[in-house]
Every structure is written in structure tokens, then in C-alpha cells.
Image 1 (cartoon, rainbow, N blue to C red):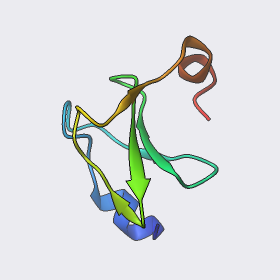
Image 2: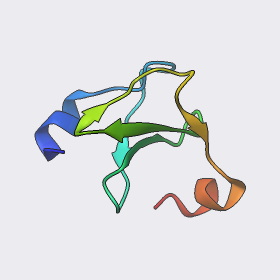
Image 3: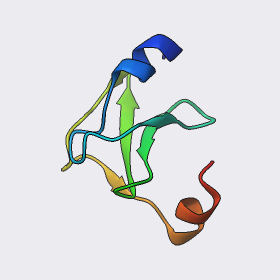
Image 4: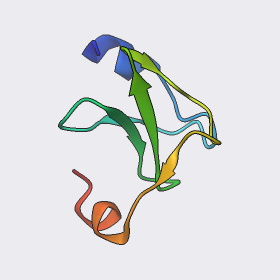
Length: 62
């Protein structure tokens, strides 16, 4: 994903900042502890599709 696009996106739950993970497969919101998948280059910004971050992921904030 393009960095400019990521900068324009916000978490659909809290409207907070999203971070692109190192593998560029998820957008992560550390405030809510959720990771939104990117499928075929399109971010899926639905809370029902997001996974919950592990405690380790929350502490390290990749």
C-alpha cells in the first residue's frame, strides 16, 4: 500500500492512527488493539474482519 494512502486512513472504531505492519498485510490500531487485513491491495476496514492483537504485539508496537 502507498504510504500516502495509509496516512489518510483512520481506524473505523476510534478514528485513531493506523500503522502498516512490516509484511504490509495489515493496518494496525494500537489504541483499540485491532489489526485490519489488506486483501488484494484493498484494506478491509470492518471491525468484524479485524483480529485482536496479542499482548506481545501491543507491547512492542511493531
